[in-house]
Image (cartoon, rainbow, N blue to C red; front, side, top):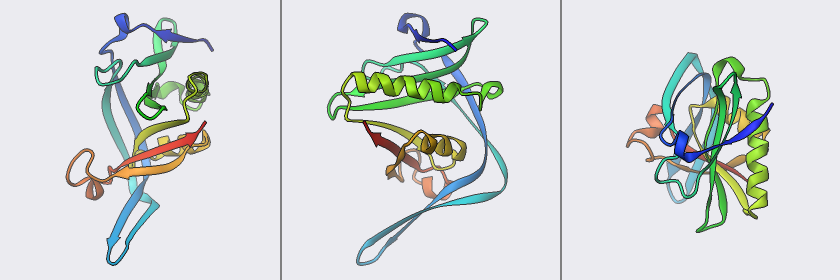
Length: 175
């Protein structure tokens, strides 16, 4: 497998249609009384759900992004995008994608190890990323890569993120 760096001039705005099947989500409960109690519990859904979204490479809001990909016969089949957030010296993974046909073949792990090496070479103190609480396959993958829960935002996407089971979770690890 050959991992190559993608050039911004060629891939800026490149759209990738992402879809995944999930059979679980991470339920968020916040109870406020004298103290604030937060619980996150993995729960199975009644039936598998398909989720989809579009990701774009080299978005303008990303500070000095680097994008790496794997090709099969000139077709991009896996990609990872990351950048250093200089204000706190953390390397953020913005996007990770493996085509449906090539999942569970090691492409995601190879790309993740590659970006982690990049982060370490930049002396980043940590690696961090965002994942929705409904994206159980991604959460399981990130935990296998050694990441753990480091925070959340219950109003990141809508005012009903908790009810929609689409809470922004932050996962990370020290480098």
